[in-house]
Image (cartoon, rainbow, N blue to C red; front, side):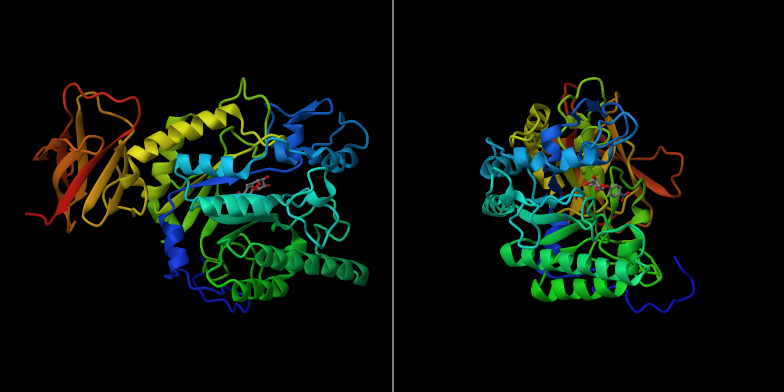
Length: 459
Ligand code: JFZ
């Protein structure tokens, strides 16, 4: 963060903490679903004699694997996969019901990934679902089905396109390059306005593929485009990965102000400390396998996250005022991976039982617990315990200067009161006051559980 102020003409267009209803809704989502679906889903990470299993390659990047062992004409063969895109089992309502059952409050759906294939019938390219045997508008079905379930829809959109002759990674230099890239910019603008026009119910965009020097050099264009999108669609929510200022600063402008409405840098990772976030809104997007967003046929032999891993990440995120967005990569026929079905169901069961601690909660200003995560809603404090202490005593450290302290405690799952006692044993009693919550002797659960406390004024 710069200490001296830099002159920035193409900086942020929105205040860092919007207080309108749409942004308040974003803050209360807690859990979201990401879906990566496209023609890479037909390949499923193993295709045409090439497999990237075990490697670092992500399945939706299959077109770019290439390499010395790849069959000749690899990219061209990939670009023709759309002729096989005919997902006979696709049912947007089924996906939306599943997302609802899981407890997702928003979905981010890939309208177009880096391969450039559009899942809506765009007027601005021939490379869309209209040219596939399936023909029908996928994006419309998603928007309608999820909205009907009360789930807000955000559209993932990759600016970068691997197979567009007008796209280039380097900043355009010659007149010919400039003219070409300008065509690409107009095309991008047209597609984004088209999406807003076709699907007025959407809440926001999740931008990607904006890291190349070409896009970075177009800061004036992207500044004006962001303004245009916001004017056309009041309340629109855009993350920090859309554009940069004239000095090349992405996510945050050269003075450290967030570009867009929330921080979008948490990809497959979570902040270790609340202070790192500087009070910004944010979401974290997460894969179930280590890497790879698109469909991967075979999950054997690699570590895939468990329900408990994912619930831990969910509570970690919401305890720091973020949303946790779990990715699904359906196959080329429109079926989720069977393991995804199982995880969605288990997450949903837990989240339903513990909803109070998950949704509409905020960060609690307490000393972080090694046993789990604190969340708070008005004078209710929740501790979701992932590491149950063997002695059955859950210790809570409250900073000395706190204006509210726990007055009573209960188990959220059955509302049974728990003993809560202030303790005079502790290594730093000058800094923290300790409260010990004692769990019932016979208490057992196979997943994390929530202790709900009522906050009162300190004695
Ligand atoms: C991008 C894509 O390349 C990928 O295929 C997937 O769609 C993912 C959600 O987004 O990958 C990223 C994006 C951002 C970061 C890293 C990889 N990041 O911020 O570090």
